[in-house]
Image 1 (cartoon, rainbow, N blue to C red):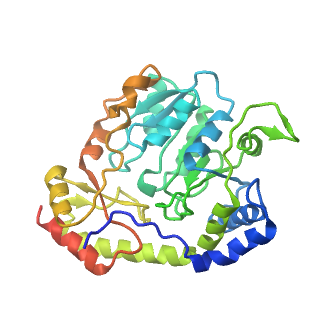
Image 2 (image 1 turned 120 degrees about the vertical axis):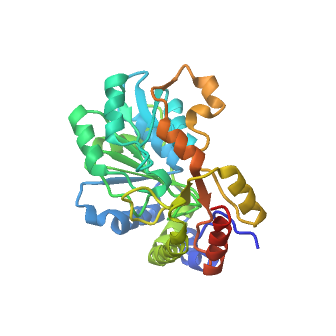
Image 3 (image 1 turned 60 degrees about the vertical axis):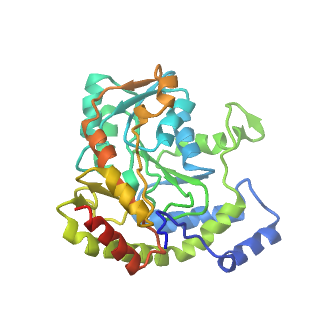
Length: 366
């Protein structure tokens, strides 16, 4: 039996039916309809009500569009320089380039697998930048307290690319955050994004910008079509009803992985240092050569993924845009992680026998 790396867990037709019936009755399909309003309220209640922050929330057509909307409405200077790790998904970089800004690439911490404020401070002294995008790598949360302090101390906007971290990433007081609702994410609606921020003025600009720039049927600034439809909101409302069940199932799968991989702890690292949450995907840090391991797992009908591989500056698009991308690091840690992290199957439909089979196959390469 082939073990797939990712299988989305979305609502069934039966679970969607009540919400779809409401769409039929309302005859409202987009443009901030009643289901989207209810979905936004549900997101705030389920994920951010305990934060005790004056948060504003906006749904977008994707997380990439969400990043672009934040970048384009922060009033950054022309040709602003935006710091981000080379160890991330290409969308982080593409959002900066599509917003017309310069990309500054740096390294990550080997312990956290993330860009941390200490690397940002070193980059600030070395090269300077106007904004920074830390990434919640693989759905592991970033330290928002540390990034809030960094943003306040240096008066630099921080946009956290928390694409895969909805449900585990705490909100920030001064940082802005973008989450993904893509089909493979922990909380998924098929496609979509979510922006949260305490900056009311910024969120008002974003709300106008994602609807072509309209305000009172007038356009003063150009925008885009970044809205979320009522159909996506319907999936989201059904998914909110399933959220506790989804969390329990993922926790159960992760707990079993921890149990069966414990005998291999001298040969692999299951998650970065000091992280306790259940991630969105499951990359292991393998101490040996990945190529024979990948080949062996493939032969055993186990699908794997190499996320954040290659590094951003190693993609073909770098050559085309290298006049707008600056590398200010040797990428020591990012290179190591990129060469040794391998994503294992991780989704709600894995059984204990599947995970035991994966562990036995890994054992052969120890």
